[in-house]
Image (cartoon, rainbow, N blue to C red; front, side, top):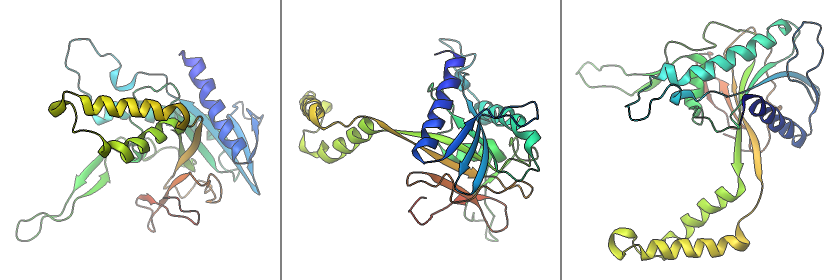
Length: 269
């Protein structure tokens, strides 16, 4: 899949999400700034501007040589995420001060090896490589470990006008059904390859194939995992926007030193 196609697919996935949430939106509107961010979104009384960025790089596998041992630092692994945050922020920069929340939206429709399935790695890309800290007690024992942001965060000192970074998440209905089926039926079969010559495994696979004929659902769902920024200068992203039943959000703690999961009225965490 070429880079242009990946970008178009990411924008189409975000547009589908916006339509399903019932938001009106304009594509690449004219702001008179010389820049055309992807979406001007109207959600009830709120107006939001969003720039979508997809991943075209091979990320951690960039430059890998077959037959050689490959290693990557966390800084290297998160570099593609930080690069796209920076590029998206550049598209939004000239809109700061207008009172609109400015949101960077990241998507990976090409399935490139980018480590942002974990929210903690997205937080690291935003505010610095996570490091573990613990106090040393008077007796020499270690206290409770906690993860804190270290160096290299894309938003640590830059782009104070960015309100949030949102990551597109996809759930495939068939894949979820399959996982639930195996969890429910695994105990009905033999112990597996090592003790029965694989007969238990073969029987389970055959039963799954039969159940799939009529039971596997089609389609998928898109939702957002939203990470508010710690900035005091950015227009805040209202919490009743990007707040569907599947959407997730990380919010500022009381003293704006960290982002923590938010549980809202519809049960999102």
